[in-house]
Amino acid sequence: MRLLTAVLFAAAVFATGPAGAAENSHGLAMHGDLKYPAGFTNFDYVNPNAPKGGTVRLNAVGTYDSFNSFIVKGNPGAGLGFIYDNLMYGSADEAFSQYGQLAQSVEMPKDRSWIAFTLRPEARWHDGKPVSVEDVIWSFEMLTTKGTPFYRFYYGNVKDAVKTGPRTVRFNFKPGENRELPLILGQLTILPKHYWQNRDFSKTTLEPPLGSGPYKIASFEPGRSITYERVEDWWGENLPVNRGQYNFDTIRYDYYRDSTVSLLAFNAGEYDYRAENSSKAWATAYKTPNVENGFIKKAEIKHNRSSGMQAFIFNTRREIFKDHRVRQALAYAFDFEWSNKNLFYGQYARTRSYFDNSELAATGVPKGDEEKLLEAYRGRIPDEVFSQEYNPPKSDGSGNIRRNLRKAIKLLNDAGWVVKGSRRVNEKTGKALEFEVLLVSPLFERIVLPFAKNLEKLGVKLNVRTVDPSQYRRRLDTFDFDVIVGGAGQSLSPGNEQRSYWGSKSADIEGGRNFIGIKDPVIDELIEKVIAAPNRKALVTSVRALDRVLQWGHWLIPHWHAKYDRVAYWDKFGRPKITPVQGNQFLAWWVDAKKEAALKSKLASAKQ
Image (cartoon, rainbow, N blue to C red; front, side):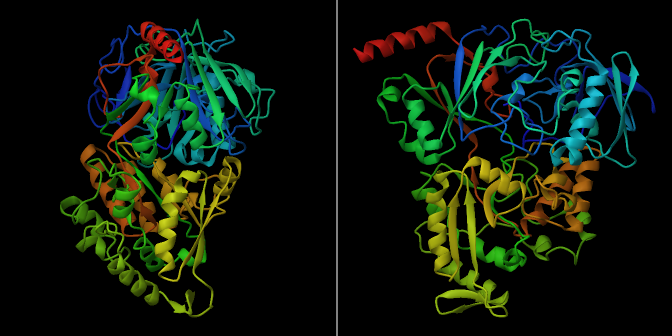
């Protein structure tokens, strides 16, 4: 939950004095003021008096074989982020603001050419040794040289990290505008240099690592379970960013073969809390005595975060997907409206933007500053960018999509894919238009198979293959797939992470996130404009321009999103009254001893 994810952030503003001067601050904010002043006691969306104690049992699907989550190799265990602290901690009720965690204060000049973090003197590793500047520098160097490719892209504009005081480290930046760098450095996870000094950081390990965070690994069974225990004398328990969070004494993850088995286990009481991502399960699988009797609660918790993009993603390294007309044609065979009605119980809205459910989404046609920005690329981007609003193909939900299929046929014919017999083949090579959708969960098979039937009417053959998590990850890391179900999480402040999603340099790096394989100089330039945006208005303009160009590239077939979090839980928890813009914050929940006792009593009576 605290792992560095696909939900990553951008651009920041720091309050400084006279030009060239730098001042100390307790936090950094995006394009404006911090919500929480110096000396604040806790975030508004937590209960600062939440009781500590109890056990929460959670689930994970698949398996794990490593406690090193920072490298490409291996399948890291669930919850490893609980072990570590970052330099700063982001609030969930602001677009992008950070406040000191390991860092007591930050210092930065107006031109943002560097940033310095002063560590808290009380910060300690679990073995009692202080967190040092040397740990920070070592962590940065190790992550950017031996960590996943993400770190090299994310921190690529950092020139060096140097010690400037007993507890102060300064990061100097390379020339060029990258206004988000101060904040993304605040997200840096700090690792203990003395622990790793005689260990190989590039290898997987099942030795519980040393951390400084709220939890440490108490026990584990490889591939089957991990149990974390709260550090009783955790140095950071009373920090404002931590108060009211990490309330469980014990967090246990149990692994299940697949989501179906996992859901059965939840309803049987094998674990306590479940974030539900299946609309079918939400609509049908919770009609059980435990739900009807109130032992299990269901909640739809609204949020206002960007939905990001989930989609069928084309691997354009494959020859058949290099032509945008082919990609566009295949999208006409996916019938979202029928799927939403018959498979999703009407729970979803269609995703049309890479930044949907936010002001960053490109709608209508470009105007004003956005039009001026895009005008410089006229002739290098699709003409539709200037004249049409992008929307994915739509149907009436009846299952009859003949009109859409006719459009698909024209596009395929224009691209040189013609029908011979019952198959669609390339008129030059004679190769059949056939591809595989690679899945890691059988839940998606019921969605892909109707898609395959529609494609069959076009003479296109779609094969479905579901593999285990280890094989799936390896095939993604090496881009060994035709189509996957994937996507990119987006924050309300996009930035450096866009390079790893769509940037040319990330397209050929093993373990990278540019699954599509995009290599487009215009997209590269637009990404840099997003990163260099000097204020919120410029950020919105540049993100919408990037969104619009991505939309008309037909790189993927957009899926859907919900504007609320679906959670089910056994009635033993308390949770804060306020839900922040980023949605449900489970780490702010707690075990309510009275509710837990009442639940045990009711369950015992029900068994009699």
